[in-house]
Image 1 (cartoon, rainbow, N blue to C red):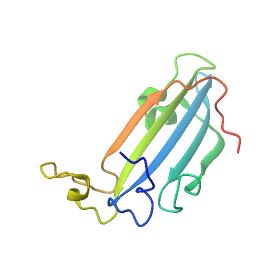
Image 2 (tube, rainbow, N blue to C red):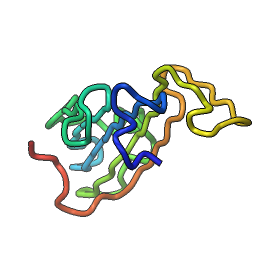
Image 3 (cartoon, one colour):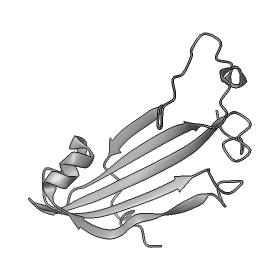
Length: 130
């Protein structure tokens, strides 16, 4: 749907896009390596120039903190990795007719239209070195 730069300012479709990545790797039963990376279309005019950065580049977390982020991030064995991907669609002077929504009336709050997915990443992709 968003194969052009329509998710960037001035947001012609009335929606901007944010994504957050939460990576964990279990070191032992109560210690995880942790990274939190984000990207947003609030700045920039294309994927190459969009706002990106780390909230946490190289951190560690206790098991209960990992559980509080998302239950599916908790790993079963040492060395196992998980990645939570959170996609946020944010209204920017949203007009539902711009997307052809005439029956559906999306109810945006701060971060409505949130999609979350937990995967096991390909070994070696994380931690991100930037």
